[in-house]
Image 1 (cartoon, one colour):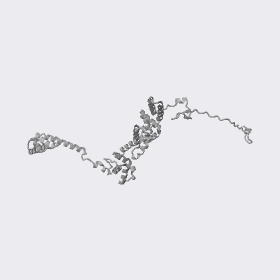
Image 2 (tube, rainbow, N blue to C red):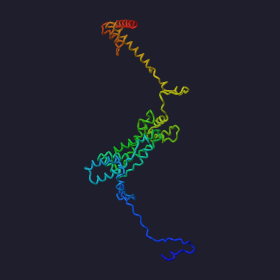
Image 3 (tube, helix red, strand yellow):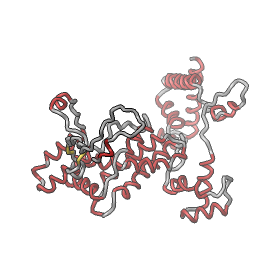
Image 4 (cartoon, rainbow, N blue to C red):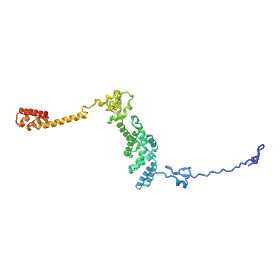
Length: 380
């Protein structure tokens, strides 16, 4: 250090001035680091300090995800039948799929937004991961692998179900029906075809949603045949306006869908109709209730009291007739039975040949028997 740097400048106070000395800067001690394992690399280093033994003893125990434990247990059971390489790969995939299930996954009908948020947290499988899960399910019967395949494709079900929101049905119900189709697709998927699961599952998801929409769109089912189903889901999109179809427009739509114009016009009338209550009850000053079908479609025998009265009268007449028939002789009873009570009524000449009398005598016997029965029934 030079002498000019230590000499006091003239004209200033005589207070002592500290002499600055250049010293080397001390380096701060490095914090201990710990190594944390990532998904695919074991060499990731974080700058957080290592916990002490006391901190480790007092730290809370982390709970194991039940789905991870289930997958790990399944792999242990099947470990004897796998090669070392396949067992190692399966264990890595199980560790990844164990975190696929979110902490809370509610049903779509309970809390739709929470369900969508939870599903979006599930990672999408790569082709390699999907192929390995498919192999575990179809070759080893691993149900946990099938569950992971379903969970990873739930977001596609939500995407497809949103396109059917114009039918006025709850979005949660549409998603749940699509989930049923997704599970059917996982069960029937053939990995030898060389396509991804989502390409195969989209048809099953739409089929289940279509069936649900047709069953619940109206009280009365309006689409039962294949042609009617095709028109139900395509007619509104093919119409160029909201007005009624003309014959030319109906024929053009029929040509596009390979149907007839009559089928197109019939489906249009079904879609424009509405469900009416059979028993409509309006206000006292409202005349709409007078057009209820229960009023002009009333059956003449709908009154239970009248029906019971008619049945009782008929039963009484049968009993009275049976009693009156007992007052006749056997030949007169047989003549009346064959002439009036049999399904195939006998003629006078057939009875005359049977009893070896004339047809006129048979007519007289019949007339006398009828008079006796009328008198007996009238007396009762």
